[in-house]
Image (tube, rainbow, N blue to C red; front, top):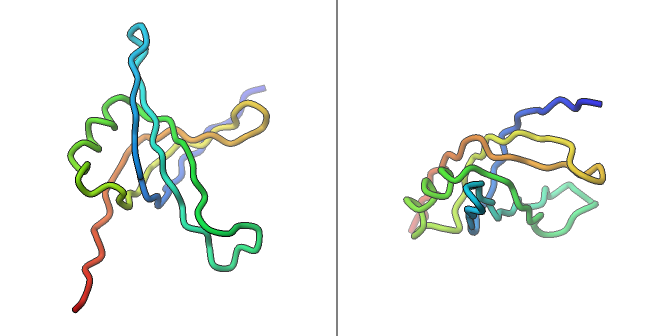
Length: 103
């Protein structure tokens, strides 16, 4: 049974991102949260998630390290994972413009 992967655009607050290199197998993870929708009766607060990413995405985030946590638009591929859970793999990261505070 083959599942079809879909691409989604997620607005996420990225809070951190570790990477690994195990015997030449390189990758990373994004730790992020998504604010709960005001009209979602099934969720309170933020949904915290871990998203797989490529090694290069961690290098890209280094350029924004002083801003983290920060909002990013994450182009991600959604797949069915083990146990029927949905998993995401980041394909692209784009920082969102910070909201300017008015005096």
